[in-house]
Image 1: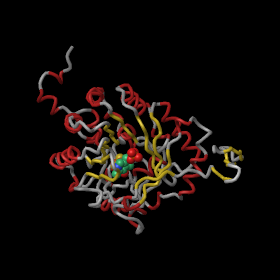
Image 2: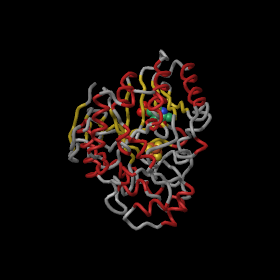
Image 3: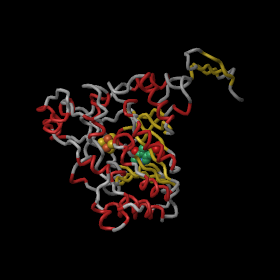
Image 4: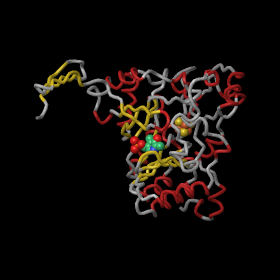
Length: 368
Ligand SMILES: *Cc1c(COP(=O)(O)O)cnc(C)c1O
Ligand code: SF4
């Protein structure tokens, strides 16, 4: 039997998809949060914080909270430290700087790739978000005109071969809105790859529908980088979402943000990376937290990140080891940070001593 949705075009547009219904039940103020949450919450503090930085959590993501102050809680529940933070910058990476951004919503920092914001909504608002200044703000709604301007820019810049759609979350656009963008980009001859940065497989896996996958696979080579920060975010639903995307031929990567009290622990990080690989998601980056105002309580020391990386390489599949990067302030770009593996170099003899993953030294003789 035919799906009733295919009978009339009108019906398709009024009928809500399941993921849209989940979003409609999202929580955006302290009253709703207190009502739904069985855990005690300081309502007044939530009000103070969410006035400055919007609150939004969908019921699926909230259901991943196991107890107060756990890794999922810290990522989604407003914390008074956000407004007490007088350190940091609204736009630490200078994404909106005219030098890198010809107009709002497009950042062209690296020679051959651009970052384009196509949505200001997310399936939930992460408390540590680098784009706290933008996400969830009505005045930052991306208009069709703005996106068209971005596409025009890309068309006029033949050196651009890689476009990264970001936001907000591009997968919060409806299928046809997203398809319009992908189609327009694919019509540009010099665009080789398109990437989508999305947290949806983690925060709203129900958004990954078979019709979305059918649409996406028409625009290959298409890559998706998703964003999981903790093993508790990996569920049957998120596994299914990643499986569907991978089955549509989309290579999946993951970008994790190193967050104090959430995942700044070698064991947790190793577990997360291994679990990602099992669901066909290749760990791509671990980001050192940016200098974003309102997120200082999440920042670890770079040394801690280096130590965590030292605990991955050699211990778990190389496939599961991402690059640890610091995105330098003022648009300095990403730089990789590695534990110090190379110890001494003897110029005369060509002897280099390396520290291996167990901390033992081995000498290698350099080429001449
Ligand atoms: C991270 C980023 C990219 C993509 O960098 P890759 O290292 O190629 O993944 C592109 N543009 C901007 C502005 C970025 O911040
Ligand atoms: S999903 Fe990404 S863009 Fe959206 S709030 Fe979270 S970190 Fe920010």
